[in-house]
Amino acid sequence: MAVRTRSPVVSMTFDDGPHPKLTPILLDMLKARGLRATFYLIGNRVVKWPDIVRRIADEGHEIGNHSWSHPNLAKYGNSGVLDQIDRTSDAIFKLTGRPPVTFRPPYGSFSRRQRLMLYEARNLPTILWSVDPQDWRRPGSSVVAKRILSGSRPGAIILSHDIQSGTVKAMPQTLDGLSKQGMRFATVSQMMGWPLWQTRNFRRVSAKG
Image (cartoon, rainbow, N blue to C red; front, side):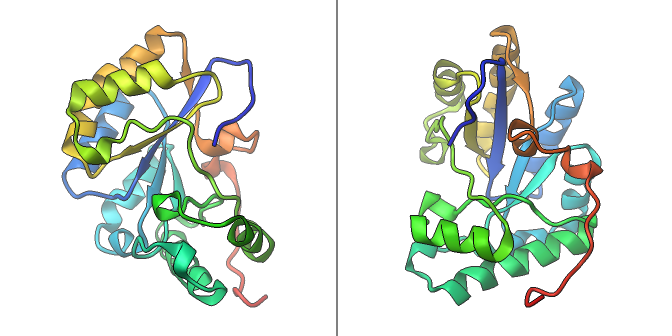
């Protein structure tokens, strides 16, 4: 949900994309500020908008696994969970040359048993969040920005959705406001002390291997 640190660093995460219009606008904002974020992508959207996925990776952002079709995985058995995750990881690997190294369950709905199963089976930690502006309720861009700015602390993992126009409109105020608070931005991997996603070398292995 967060990382224990005294360093003034936060991780902006964006779920449910890519979106054909909004994600490129968000990427322009991040690029203009030289900031890196983490995008938890849905597999069936990855294959639909591959060019945006490649751009996310090429511009230094991290891509995480957010399932294939955004179901409530708490209701799934192990094989169903792994199918949702494996299909998504494979789609991202084919486009970027690297698989996701973290997983975020849709709705945050994933039992402790499932989290342990996934880590043992695929070495994927489950990443939730410590700041939730509830942007999916569409409260307006100024409210989204205010909730993120007031709730963020060093080590925060901030949840947001780049499929919501109000969220994307809130990002200039949010990103600049966090910077004014002295916060720096890191990907989830960086927050966890891992190398930048783009610098890691991966090879494809069988899911059964």
